[in-house]
Image (cartoon, rainbow, N blue to C red; front, top):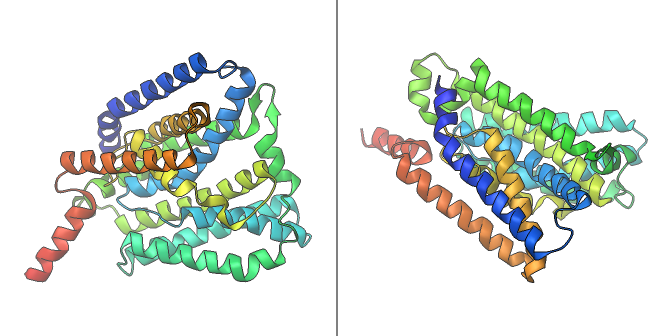
Length: 331
């Protein structure tokens, strides 16, 4: 029931995001010939899927009341480690599986730090991200000969099933699975309940620690996979490949109606947000705007989203947990 209510509360914002995306598409179509062509739409879907995979785990983490700042480094890890493993002769499919599993384990470390040791999500995920970056600098980049991306990654990122990009099909399947899990399963309801009010969730018999550890683990796996396909599209794996997706992963879910404080939103909303951000990004060069304009837009979206959800959700999320901790110390 909690999941259904959360979905209904976020539906208006999701609809607004869809209208925003439609307006952007119309503006691009009117302004530039060929913007609505099949080739350009296919490219937009590919770029949107990159944001969508980067924001997949982030959405689950945020719905559960957390935040994952290690996303960009795990994206870099996915691309670089794949190149390292394949350069060493490992089977390409196995190498992808290894990258995703290691990403899952790194995400699990984030979850354990947050739930078991009580480290603040921002501090824990930022610290783990720094460790991943140190590994890539000390080990990964030194071993990856030219950082060339194996064919399996480029095939998924650049291949097509008829007129539809393969990566967009994969994204659609994953989105449907995540939507069903969040809306129809006990785990999905537990995620919403944990993000809405973890004390009530515990009293209801929900293992909030387990729920959060799973969301962080999924975030790590999704980020590593995002690195695989992004590097496959670019054709190279390098350290900064994941940096643009930290703010993008957060902005997409905020635009799609998720509360940055947890407990409200859907992955479908994030999908719409990812498409809207991709359209916004594609319009920048058409109006002679530089990449800094997109960063400003991301920042404004996140600030407005935090302001709105803080106003609507007094007593929820990080602020509520901080106040409860202060009250406990005072007592």
